[in-house]
Image (cartoon, rainbow, N blue to C red; front, top):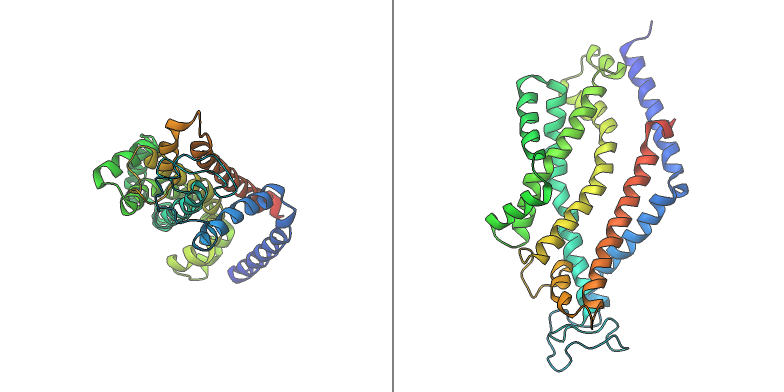
Length: 294
């Protein structure tokens, strides 16, 4: 007769073997590799912007306004004589920092709430899902813009607005995964073995449901970056003169016919980052898929 301990041991061994096979295949996953290269290059440029940017991104030179691309200014200068390339690099630093950090609080909080709701059910699950339904009834960007308008412009307001809205998606994903996972044999074996609910959630269910949340986080970062750029374009984002891709698009659009690169290049960077993160999400989805891990 198979004991609960034997079931858990067998499950852990199969999970480790599947994870090992998946990790060995990551470099064969085209979308994942391409996404990592794209995002990695942009992240490196953003991190080392203080060292590699050719000019001070906020220093004005009114004698060199609206210059075309040249050897001195590879992407030209804006209406205040600031180097567009330098501002693009520093803008990546600002947008990526907010985009990545803004995911952390919703990721942690939403995952915890979703796991508790899915595992214990009852009135807590009902309350959580009603709150989730309310947030899903409104478009993401509309709520974020409204909250930033209420909180005021600035980086802190953006963090708060995104956190208030984004956690519900993580809660819904984790809840669904936990509801399925808690019916599996290894969870039943853990209960029969006398393990506490918290230990079952953390040690056994958690590692098996987080892969879907991590995959979603990639697309969530894309949404956050798009929200930041949108807020900057609407004048509700980072206050000038701090460089930011959305505000660069706004400043450059009036010169689109003569200095097209001022608005086009920041927009292309948003597209490139979105594409890279989407490819990483697709690659992780393929890599961590239960069917692929067998």
